[in-house]
Length: 196
Image (cartoon, rainbow, N blue to C red):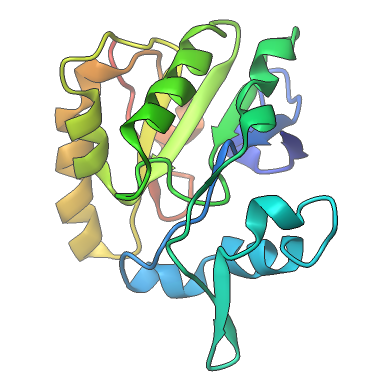
């Protein structure tokens, strides 16, 4: 729900996009997670009064570092925020976790996708390290044309594991990925031109 300066979330007009975190937290999935920017941010937000309830219990200190606990929180107020945004924008979904974390309840995913479907003026960008979970969830569901699905990869092995699953998921979402994604300028990520 905050403005982000991440280049690939900018609109074609150069306008900054937003990050939208209706569900927060994650757990370590692979070696690339050791450098996750979100873990120390979540730990810091858990100590701030206004965000304490949302982030409390999502991280713990291990050997001097903040590490995800796997505890997930759904923020009901944030979940509905895109419905109030009138001006079209690009939105990075769950920058503070993985929407397709194994612990996310199907009902939470249903509600998140319902909001995205009900906001066709926005383009929602979802990155996951769990494309198998995304594919399982999206299988048989109606196409959501304003959702771009991508995978983050940290090395050749994870690229070879995740990218084919992403491409096999293509018909489940829609839209066309920005040329920035097609040229692979997103460091460590692949965005699919999904659906069209």
